[in-house]
Image (cartoon, helix red, strand yellow):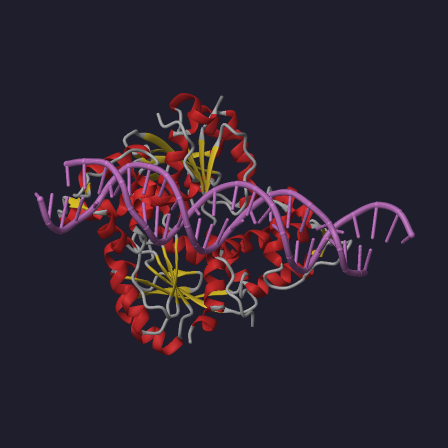
Length: 213
Length: 213
DNA sequence: TAGATTGTTAATCGATTAACAATC
DNA sequence: TAGATTGTTAATCGATTAACAATC
């Protein structure tokens, strides 16, 4: 649809717009100006208008934006109107946390498979899905397909599983392992590096005293 | 120590440098040039040198950087040489995942408390720490202190717990709730918004076909 | 020494903010 | 209409990359 490439900085802000617009919807707000929205989000009206106009002209002159419409449109841009199959590889606490998170289903992501190497977990059910052994990955994906694979496994296992997923044609990897995966250009990777996040927090905590006058 | 403010873009890269240098240490590599490191990290030598020189001149002319020394120095910059008490609020799967993650202890973060509102969990032990009721938060923090509080609770509860933490003087919040917390300027917040991350992945998956020639 | 690589300044690139004509 | 607010262009700001003198 859209021809030009959108800057990553804009993409990263879209989920946040989506979240705020969802909250406004719940509050029963029907319309909002970029100025008012920017105050809520602690950003600038200019940035909001610039960001949105990367995709389309959603606003109404002299009035602002229709909350419901904008929420829907951003949802479409993010692909939330399509349903996606999500498999989770690694059924430890983190894997089960993701498998259990109902919010994701509301955004169109359906948990269809859950894998682990630990035989003690075999057959245990999480949200109605039985944990399978990792050996069954190929058979399962060939049979049922998978759009997104969440990798909640130790870093030493991650690259080899990523290779198997690429071979199976799974197009997207949501990577929680503390390693940067090497994948082909057909594969989309999104990293959640919790230890990086904690280190960033640690830096800000450490250097905080300088800011305080 | 350092006077000038460091740009957030640089700070976000530091944990990644730290991770790669740790890997090089494990491989027994003693020295590395910015050029060689940039190839491994898929970044540029120029950026690495710029980034590091925000803090100090760590390199040696004609030779490069001493891996062990640079790893240690970045660790210090990130505050990993100091030990921090971490409490986890919300003992669901995500909370337990964080509580169980041994890697954090190696970086100087010690789990000292674990809280939940569910009475069924009271007294259950995770890594030797008994789960306490959220009502005990004030008493616990006044007695034992806390440097960082991880918030692994539903979004509706997050802001009110954040206020309690601010009142108790807990300086840092690692927020996993899907909401932007409003905190005073004395409090440092680091967000991990998993649903935002999944939506970003969804966008990249949706718009992927355009890139493929 | 000669080759290599740094630290740093200058040039480029990209992202954010400001300004304003168009118009509902 | 008059007031408000958009979409968009221009100006500013910040971050990345290139270049190179200094020197181990």
